[in-house]
Each structure stands twice: as C-alpha cells, then as structure tokens.
Length: 233
Image (cartoon, rainbow, N blue to C red; front, side):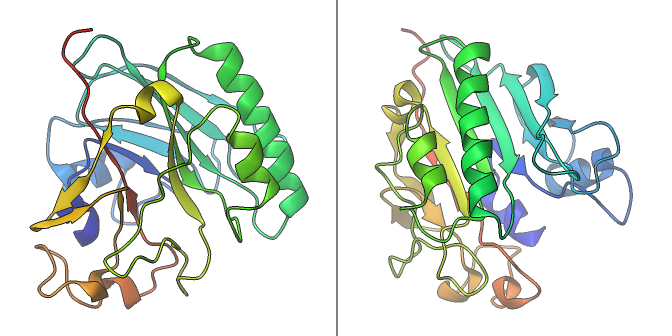
C-alpha cells in the first residue's frame, strides 16, 4: 500500500483485490482518498481482478475465464480527458500452466477485437505469470498490443517476480495508445520505457515507501507506464 501511495497512478489494474481491513471501497479510500472510482470482479471469486481510476468509469464488466476457477478478466471504459475513452483490461493468467496461458491469450485477443473499437486506446494490465517474453502468450497478445518498450528499474532489470528473474507483470498498450507513451518520472528519476518499482534501489525511496518494502512478502514488483493524451484530435 505504501508503494501504491507513492506511485499515485491515474489508473491501476489490481489483482487479488481483497482487503482484510474492510471492503474494496475501504481499500480504494485508504490508498488514494476520496474521488477515485473502481470496479471489481463480481461473483465471489477468491482472487478477484479490479481496476481503480481517478477518472470516471463509464462502463465496466467481466469476461469469463473458462481456464481458471477463482478469477475472471475485468474490463472498464474510463472517461479520461481527451478525444476518446480508455479501455483497460485487468488479467491474472494461469500459474504453472504454459498451455493454459496461450489459450487465455487467444481468448483475450478475440474478446478485445470484438468488444472494443478498432482504433481504441486499450491497456492490458496484470500478471501473465510468464517465464520470458518469448513465451506463446506474449506472441499471441502481440497481435493487438505493442510490446516494443519494456519497463525496467534503475539497474535495467525488466523482470517483476520476487526473485527478479521473470517478466510476470505487464502494462501493454494498443498501437494507438502506444504512440502516446512518454517516459515515466518519479522522485527526480526518469524511466524511458516505463518503470519497474523496487524500493531497494531507491536512496531515499519516495514517501511513504520504506527501503525494504519490496523485500517484505512481495511476490511482484509494480509496473508503471505513462501516456500523454492530447485534449483534442
């Protein structure tokens, strides 16, 4: 929570959207205060996906994931400032089943092509559980997303799992959105292709982060990208 408070994202794709201290609304408030919007998977999934946004959520829903029993795909149409909305899809692909991740990616490509406008701004955020960028899931998602710019930390490490040796987590942008990507800036540092955040590489870390936050029960490092959307076409 301290890391998310420091990053202050405009839009957040969040997996395992549960909160022991209260409701999902309580978590959103405790993270960002009032004025943020959110959507969360319905139906009692054990590990629900969700999307949090500082901009109004115009529409939202979920797509059934037939390959996993405890979560589905969540999407939202967000009214960002600019000529058209942003569509965000939050996913959490299968763990330890490479074959299923390929099937899930095929389904996601089919859904995105059929449900969103052809030239829409679309971001896919989430945990792909992939061991490398050469896996089948990345290749399939590359049919509708641009993965040419890979976020990294200060040391150039692009991996996001606890051991920092696998690219589990991503923010992927559709071609029209990818054209709007700009460097991500935080705490006086600039990350040309987006940022993977590891608190241990900061001295001092941005408030309220503590130096060892990324070492305390953290299975994933957050990934952040920045896009500059024109107010007019």
